[in-house]
Image (tube, rainbow, N blue to C red; front, side, top):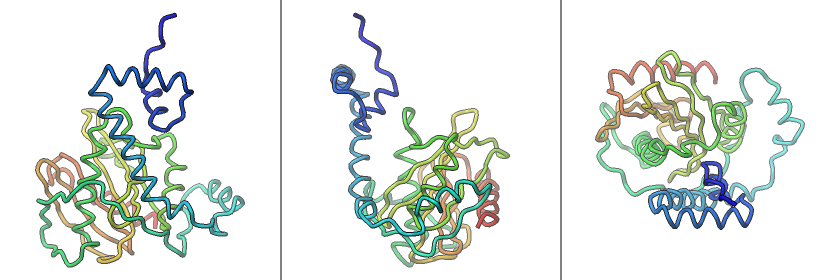
Length: 259
């Protein structure tokens, strides 16, 4: 019998430990013969373990009464918007990558490690990790947008919005939760017809809870970051600051309208 080819679904199932034992062995044999794929998959496995370790304290918390099944069903039926939860989820500390120095923030000082400068670094780190990924850049895809936003809102303890950037030519790809040094954050990803990807990172802010939009730059990655009503946002990608600025402005308007 000719062995079934190894597909992306098989690789995803291997990372998530969802394959049958015999299929797991077939994937392992495939990875042994394909070191480049193996290196990438090992990176996903390491990310999975880091996320599990970072978010374990949250997962072990008792379920808040506001998240009972009846309320969750009611929230799913709402056409727009979600309640702004009264309490914040516990933060999980984990640095995905080492210091990503070199960020410059124009017209903004760096008063605290948890402020807008830190958010900018975290957005850069997330872009570097997930934007180049051609197999699994997001955890939940665009078709699951409502479930993704609901899930991230519950986990962050604050309402999260995924802006529509289609007017600028960028499609919503999906998103995931990522671990940062200042707790969980929401990551949304977009791409255009040329394969250019943008990443938006959002998380609650411990300091600089309201901040003007500030330009960022690191190597070939540009972006803008801001904070509003205790939530920080950073949109980053390879386009120039002149191209990104109106896109970030539009995203900010949408988010402010959705609060």
